[in-house]
Length: 242
Ligand code: SF4
Image 1 (cartoon, rainbow, N blue to C red):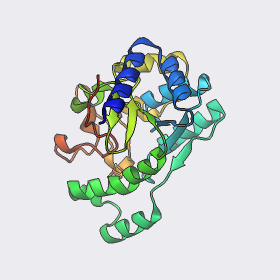
Image 2: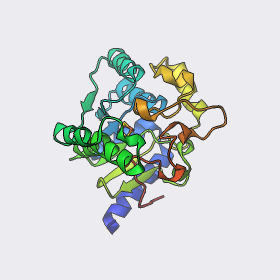
Image 3: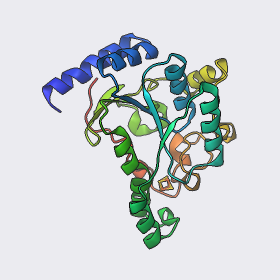
Image 4: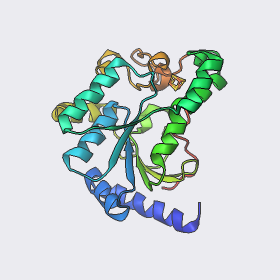
């Protein structure tokens, strides 16, 4: 990361420490007009941020990645969100030129066969569409929380994403699950009802299950794999700025 970029990340990190989420996003949209983007998977966290953006009419592009393997409950939440905020959240889909040969060669559920196959599926269905979605933007807002995964405990609230060449802002990084739930309930925000059935981190249907009380948050994702390999390539934390 170049020195000017490092200074920019540090400066935004200072702003993020002192201001409300709405104010930080507003400042970012003033500073980077048309280049602030938010990715939602319709999780609790993402619904909260969507509410902050749309209730305050902040000029942020909101998108989701429709992998083609999402839960029906996720589509219901998507629809309820569109209705509540009178919007149409933009979706990015896998490139059929990649997906068709991938499924043709490996079958529909090859992610259960090996970590490499799973990562290849995540690349086609998530990572490549994400790169298209982020292209041309400067700031990526995410719903990441430190509680979600052991490798997210030490990440900064504002960081440089080398693989996507973008600055990431995680407004809810230090919020607890209870903080998020309280906000969702207080403002009666639509949410994915799978959260009421023990699902914590909700992704694709074949790769997500509910967790038991006390189980690690990531235990519900790719449960057949070693814990250390459980990232899908969307969030790679490389360079750190505090
Ligand atoms: Fe494929 Fe599962 Fe990754 Fe979804 S989470 S893209 S189905 S491997």
